[in-house]
Length: 163
Length: 179
Image (cartoon, rainbow over all chains, first blue to last red; front, top):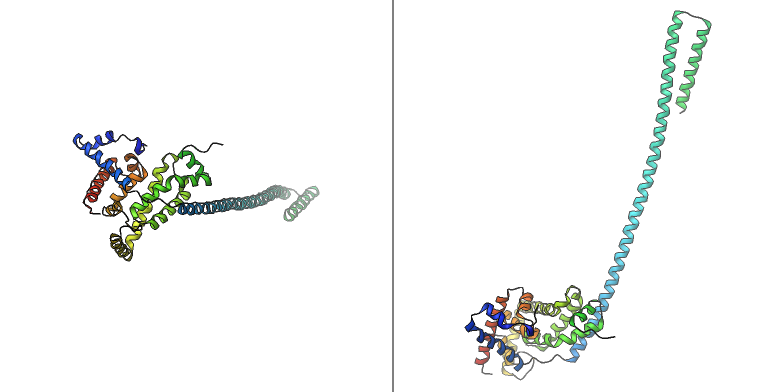
């Protein structure tokens, strides 16, 4: 931006006024400066300037103090938020770990149950087949085999309920 | 170490909180700004008060100023302060009547330097406040018409026309005054 003392007033005025108006406008502008020079405003007293400077120093100290307070508060807020987030994260991980362990144990138990159930079903099938044969022809060895299978079923079932 | 050379350097130092830089800015601009406020208020005490208030605002807001346009920024703030001052004055009818009373007293005692002490101040008071303000700002700020237009957020032609019309009227008032 151009300062007053450097501005090209002729160039500026010619953009807005007719050529025959230019001289009068320039005279009016110069006259205004002359008027202000003829009636100068009083000077500001040194006392007032010193008072302003001392007020500025006090204000600067206040601004610096506020700035330190704001920065401290901001850092404290960041630390608190960080700590809260960290604690939440740790708690979530811990819950997640507990849940994972519980689910794994349940899956293991389910597997055991399923395998025991399969074994019981097989034994039952075997027993049915033996009983069918028993109807067809009874002998001592067959009865013994049936007893063995029955005992096995009872043992398996008791194992199942023991877990 | 060499001291800062330009206003821009001083403003940059002030922005970093340099006490000496603020002191330099006060020394550089207090006279012109005091003239600006004095011409518009016609009162030494009020001009002192506005000047103090302006420099404190400068300390608070210097971070938002572009060092290259510091002078225009400072006078824009001065103009805003003067507008607030006028608004506060207008709000108080009691205050206005008090001023009228003072004007009458001052007219009877032109030598007293408190309110509308000289012929120019009295004639400036007869202009529209906005016109008086732009004329006074042009003289005391030494801003170009381009800078004035930016400060006032008005087209340069409008500012030029307002200044010219105002000056013509002021000149007539000065010539017709029998002081």
